[in-house]
Image 1 (cartoon, rainbow, N blue to C red):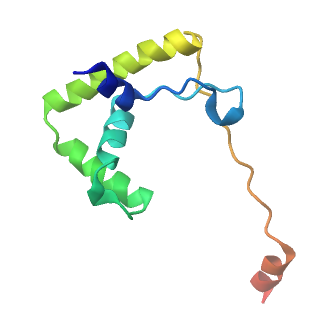
Image 2 (image 1 turned 180 degrees about the vertical axis):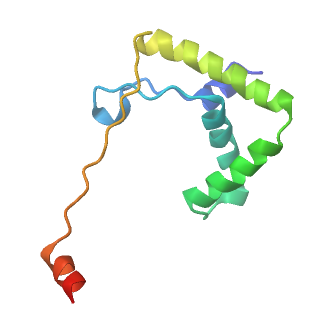
Length: 111
């Protein structure tokens, strides 16, 4: 397997995510598999939810060897992530604040 292919699949970003001080999340076998498969032209124009559903079905039918390949890529990605961001990394999700409904929506609900 060529190094450029591995770099394409793993795709570790050298800069921090979205301009914040958070490192990108480590990538597991499923994430790497989904990224690889979602590049197929058959998924063009489909919603993310449908693509994920179809790729999940593909993942469930994959052989042990294919799953082991992506597990190996995941271990490599983890090693590179540790080299780049340190081994004290801990995933800390940022929860989006729910926007308050505007006054018009409140009025419509009362009717």
